Amino acid sequence: MKILKKSLSILLVLTMLLSCLGSASAANVMTKEQWDKYWSDTDEISAAVTMFPGDNETERYVAWYSDNAEGYVELTSTKGTEKIDAQAKQTAQGDYRLCAVLKELEEGEYTYKCVSGDFTSDSYTFSVEAGNDFTALFVTDIHVSQDKNDSPVDTSGETAFRYNQTLEAAYNKALNQGNTLDLIVSAGDQASGGYRKEFVGLSSPSYMKSIPFAISVGNHDRKSVDYKYYTFLPNETDNTFRSYIGTDYYFTQGNALFLVYDSNNSSMHGHYDFTKEAVEANPDAKWIIAVMHHDLYGGREPELDTENALLKLLWTPIFDKFGIDLCLYGHSHFHTISNVIHNNKTVESLVDRDSVTDPKGTIYMATGSINNTADPTREDGSEHPLGENAAHSYLAEDAMYSLLQFSDDSLAIKCYTVDGDEEFDSLTITKTTQEGGHKYSSSKFFLLPLIFFVSRIVNVINNIDMYERYVDQGYDVSLGEGLVGTKLFG
Ligand SMILES: [Fe+2]
Ligand SMILES: [Fe+2]
Image (cartoon, rainbow, N blue to C red; front, side, top):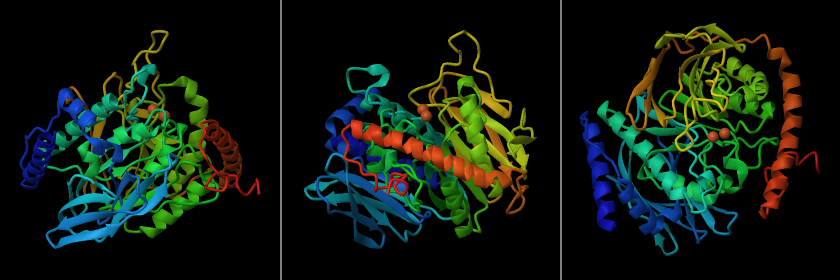
């Protein structure tokens, strides 16, 4: 096993070196047999070492599970080796999730190990690149599942393998284009039952140790409490009316600002304050990318039309107000890219177009699931209907991912299937000025106070429901620890 892992490490380093040289074509693929052996023989998988983004590209958060409340990351660069102490959260299971924040990183290659008590992780390699050109992988609804299709045997390893295949496909695709993957953006439902074992599976691909993973909380992730302990994220907002499990956070990469929302939380006042603070703290950001779980404009599921109408009413005034360029989401498990939307209406059609310059609004994009791919046909044999504001779609039962190539003035989106390697959709957004074509007013803005009030009440009710769910599961949760409504209940 050690030999296999060393070979994979060498292969990973070699492919990184090749990509630095602008070369392409190295394949980096793990067979199911190799994966099963890795999954069953590697004790370290349970530590779930994961790299999350820091405040910007010069920071990384490295987290792992440990029996010990104290630990550190040993970080090595060309300048030498240093120890960075970790902070700790006690988990629902009673052990600890540790996190070291690697700060003031300069361009170059690094290796690190996580150390706590008797545990020392393998060495992992990552690279830091500055500048506005970078490639982000966009995936959603990975659905690592402990009991997929009610399986009596644990399916965490099998579903994690599928995620690893996706990461391999994306990594090699970027490599063939002369790029490295600098960031993984995931729009929620990383897990299915929200179980710790699922987050362990999610973390098991080697890419999760070397590429910052921008996670967001989906409705499935919060079915249990473990998301809360698994994650360490930068610039988290902590307003009173947040969810128990997750919250909004932001970070920058190059000249892009990523606003990652907990869309299970309907309290829009908190989201508004968070967005205002993040945008004002990053006035030089040219690209503003929202990431959340719930699909607003894709359609495809008529039974969700009422919920989507409400979500659009709640979210779009904020996106309009702050000039969000692109909103990435999932939940529907269907791939769609919207027209340019402002004030909840199409202001520019993107039908049959693969480029747009200075869009006067926001473009919304959903893509398909990794492990729970959607059947294109409904139970009655009809096709899932497309949303009226959707421009691009791909209706197929394929696992899919997208590469987002950022540069100073353009954002090129290219979408692929995991197995077929097919580019099935693309869109390039160009901004000729800092703000592009954004409008900064919304005729619905006068409705915000009403929206704030109603959404807060809805959220309190929602959180009471979740609180009862966690208590029923036997978790020791307290109303005072981020569970919204605390003030209402004294
Ligand atoms: Fe999902
Ligand atoms: Fe979902």
